[in-house]
Image (tube, rainbow, N blue to C red):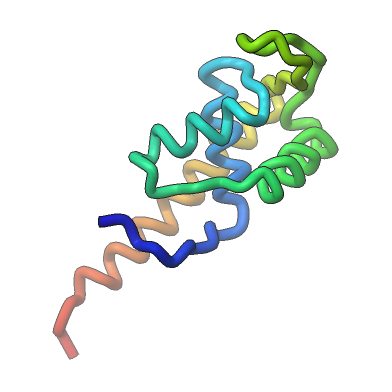
Length: 114
């Protein structure tokens, strides 16, 4: 049963997920929201109010670029793609995240030890 209480992602998590998905293929915003939800087995629900500011930050930082296109439903959409700098940044962020997660797991593995 999914947790009914929404949880905030840690800073940078949304951007990291967006870059990872865009590394697979260019997408528009709604497709990113749907893909995050699907890939997380509905554990993550990203609101447009969070996604679009994150995309704007990524654009401003040169980690993604965007162009206008047409969706499968024939609507005008902004399609985002990862840049070379974005791919490099993603690698660094994923490595940093994995080290942090390793550290957390080491602490949690202590269990009931005192």
